[in-house]
Image 1 (cartoon, helix red, strand yellow):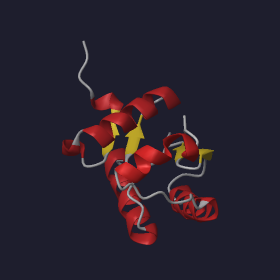
Image 2: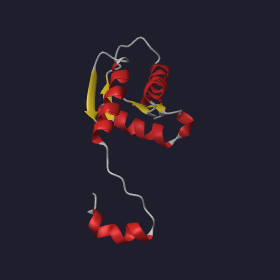
Image 3: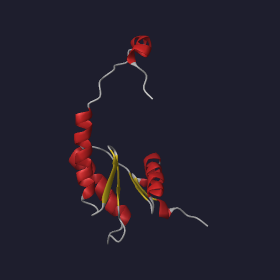
Image 4: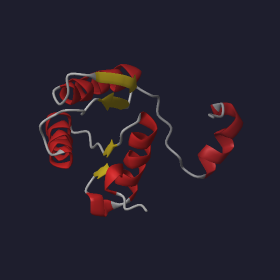
Amino acid sequence: MGVPYFKVEGLIIRNGIVVKSSNYPLYGDMSSRVMRVISQYSPIQEVYSIDESFIDLAGLPFHLRSHMQSLRQKVKSWTGVPVCVGIGSTKVLAKLANRIAKKYTKFDGVFDIDELPYE
């Protein structure tokens, strides 16, 4: 949670911290642009928040990882915004897969949780 500026003003000044106001209209515009690109990759999209979206990939005739790599590249190219993609059979699994995609560079920003080995 945030702290009011006046409560940390001394700390900010002592450490030479630069404080800037947020730009919610810009964030909203960029989010809309990203979501429009994502919507091209599935007929069903749920915009979950300003920076999160779920799309239904069931039944699509594509290799999911390469399809989602294409999505990542297009979002970056068209908007300048880097994204990672998590693929899972539920929203919870997709969010977990996204966390793995962000954390481990060997997955190149896309991780399909169904590719995890299990017994």
